[in-house]
Image (tube, rainbow, N blue to C red; front, side, top):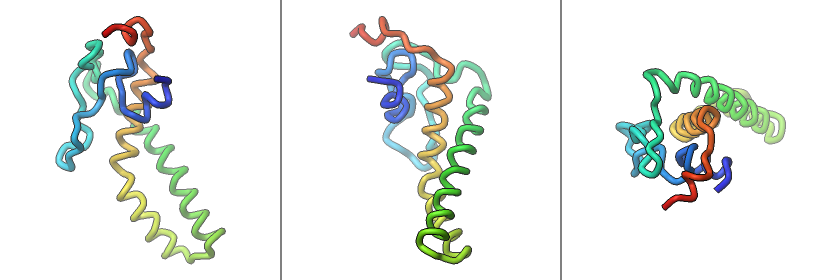
Length: 122
């Protein structure tokens, strides 16, 4: 499994086998993560407030998505500003949890190095 599929599938960055998030998805605790990897034991929250940096990744992701949606609606479809923003609000409401989860996944994959030896065991 490469790094992109590991990020996309919310897998452990060190072994790329264990799951980052508790499944099934629950609206009460959408960002609930396992304490550590079930395969290699990597801690997913090394210190309190660790995922504060993921907020910046989600901000960048959201800003580009918003620009793309508004630009497409206004320039390609010819919609007015109110209709474009109505679609933007709906799209952001639907994608909020996905963006937060993928941002955390990207952030921990930046910080934790992949270990091929751990990935090859069991």
